[in-house]
Amino acid sequence: VQLQASGGGLVQPGGSLRLSCTVSGLSLENHAIGWYRQAPGKEREGVACISSGDGDTFLVESVRGRFTISKNNARNTVYLQMNSLKPEDTAIYYCAADSLRDVGACTVLGGTQWYDYWGQGTLVTVSS
Image 1 (tube, rainbow, N blue to C red):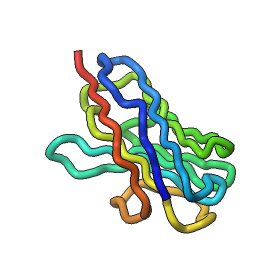
Image 2 (cartoon, rainbow, N blue to C red):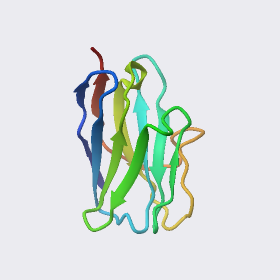
Image 3 (tube, helix red, strand yellow):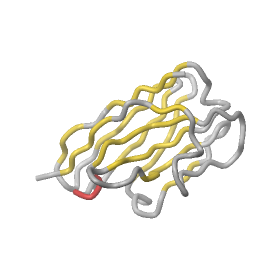
Image 4 (cartoon, one colour):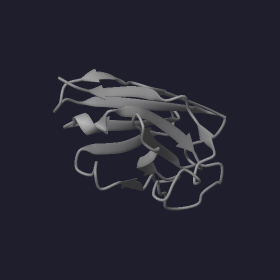
């Protein structure tokens, strides 16, 4: 299983970026995908996830209303659309896959233990 995150970069406050996570080795129809981020000197924290099947979504409160998560099963790719970016969104963003099949609702709360396969991360810098 491999996950490739891309789309990071430097953006001004208030700007937008779209991150992509392309997955190989398992199907998004059967496996949930989560996005996490890690800022310098801080622990990795959950951002959003999308479940298997119909793709129910969950976003943490700090990004709700600004970020959206979606997927294209045919392309086996998950997207994280980030709008109204703030300096505190600066971090390395990682996507991760749950090895369990069809587990229903996803979460990114309470740590990283829900996900077994991780991509290499993509850096997002929000600065003027």
